[in-house]
Amino acid sequence: PIIPDYLAEVLEQVEPDASGAPAAYIPELAEADPERLGAAFATVDGRVHGAGDIDVPFTIQSISKPFAYALALADRGFGTVLAKVGVEPSGEAFNEISLESGTGRPLNPMINAGAITVHSLVAEAGSGPAERVRRVLDGLSAFAGRRLETDEKVCASELEHAHRNLAIAHMLRGHDILTEDVRAVVDGYTRQCSVLVTTRDLAVMAATLANRGVNPLSGEQVVPEGVVRQVLSVMFSCGMYDAAGDWATQVGIPAKSGVAGGLIGALPGRIGIATFSPRLDSHGNSVRGVSLFERFSSDMGLHVMEVP
Ligand code: GLN
Image (cartoon, rainbow, N blue to C red; front, top):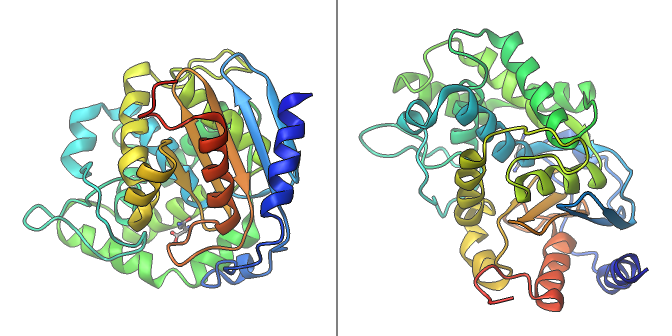
């Protein structure tokens, strides 16, 4: 089996790297086993290959952002969403308290300011907090091709320390980007981040983006094709926060990271890739995840700017 053997070999190469640390600002995440390591590929024709800890559940965190963005675009249309959230790279940390000058719009949907706003835009107009949370859980489950659940402990742990996201949400409310109860939106956004996934799930979710929005296992068209183009473009320019430029040049795959240690990449028409390793670098990206993707990209010629 060529792909599993290759994956096992690459995992072995990065395994000794113990640099970085699990996210500490969410106490429950700091408890995670830092030694976990896994990688999975899901092809657009529905084959999944993996090595390491690919069936260990962890919270999706910021990897939920591109999928929630896809749902908001599908539910409300491009005009409504773009009026509230831009598509410009911020070059700043994921939790920066920054909004576009003048409009107060978050620069993009991958930073927290944008993602909190996006959460307020899922489900049909006029929906309340419970409907939005349901829509996100249903939508993420459709991307994964199985029923997902929320980790209540991680969610509660993050909510106890959510002052920074609340501050961001209050700024958004001050600019009328958010127009409702700030706490309910941050609560819903935090629930969105606390959905449990495995590396295998994330590979299938990424493969759904790579496959024009059609889940390669279930065959379901989860979001329209035009939405996927928008999402992958924003992942390419903004998915790795203040490391997005380095990533675009070195790895060259539309991607998204999460503070629980997950990382996904989606190659249009080809594969979804996911890795899991909890120790993070200074940008909040998984250290060994980044090394794995660098290797995948160069070993298999996956950089989207390279002629295959
Ligand atoms: N829930 C986390 C937060 O809002 C997600 C951050 C991340 O994964 N980068 O801080």
